[in-house]
Length: 297
Length: 238
Image (cartoon, rainbow over all chains, first blue to last red; front, side, top):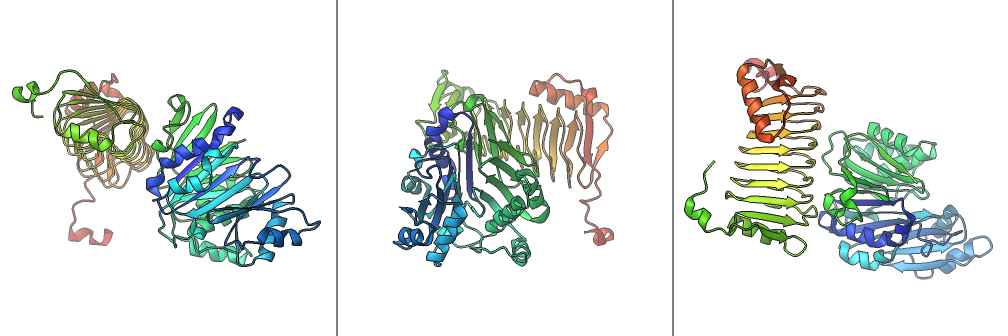
């Protein structure tokens, strides 16, 4: 099964409420995925300060911030915050430089999110517990997404938790299963792409990241994904510019989009949208199969 | 449809009973609807909850004031259920009798496997509308998505708008009436002539659903009957 929620706030007055809105939405999809929850938040300056990068890490050793600070040019201050299974490191450097220093300092750790406007949390547990662990209700920002997982393709471990954030400020969450992911994985590996997990959804995220790196926009990247992947999927992909939703041509996996002058929201089921402000006036639709829906900031 | 007996009707209170789903769970609501003490119910704040008014088996009126989740009015017998909003997957699935009216849009698999009764969707319906329908009548005011009436066995599907791809794939004996365009026809679904008996039944269905279109604006589709006779002569085709 699995549940997806995403919220893109158009009205800056709502930005301080992002976390509370996401928390309400998360309740509506918790039954669809009680195994694990991942959250990505864009634009929370308290968690990812301006001029800083934030990199999310699993299996981080206790003194990682000190070790990473020692490896970065100019020895900047690195701050580490442990949030359940995830540790978020922030430093006034580029995201890729911080991620590289983390991997060099602690090769046993795993980078699961990186960006200068993005913070990613992953963990195993029930959505209502993890929302508290992540301090979700206190989150500010302009965009967020979350995924509740009911594992079918790989183990219930933090590494198998969505979102897959494998490019700068990018996130992908997936409801469904790709059936030819092993083939696509081998093709990508031949092109030099490396993988962190056995998860089929990671292959989708790596594919999209590779397309975006080649200069595709979100719509083109997701159309290419549709030509390359077999299987069932509803995908929500976010970047620091926007928000995209696509379903496969058979469209077995559900999705509902609601559009309001103050926000755009997407969820696996309507009940996740029921408490959004002004939902009564929103245009609620079900995305057509095979069509890419995008919203830009 | 079984008429409400005098004694049964007299036991029920005439005033509508209001159930607020913010305060009362769906399970308690459905328990009341399965052994009703009133003739009419108002359901407030459905908030997309699943299985609202599923399994009704009495001649009662249920008004759902808002958007319903999956399987709303599923398995309905004899009930008259109105959703003043949209409905999620499988609205009126396996309905036996009675009526279900959705004033907004319906998600996938509306009326799936339904055996009787009338499902009216005033807005649009998504994919797989009427999948495996077995006697239900479905009237949709707007468009329906792909794979409508897939493996439909009996009943009537009326679409006042356009239809997506693969209409009536592997259809048995259901009859389909479409006012707008059809994307593609599914395997063994063919256009058929409109005879007087078809115009008459279509007029009756449109009137029951409350739509005023002329029957002359519709085309009829049904089974080519080449797929479901499994004979040894066709063994190479299976």
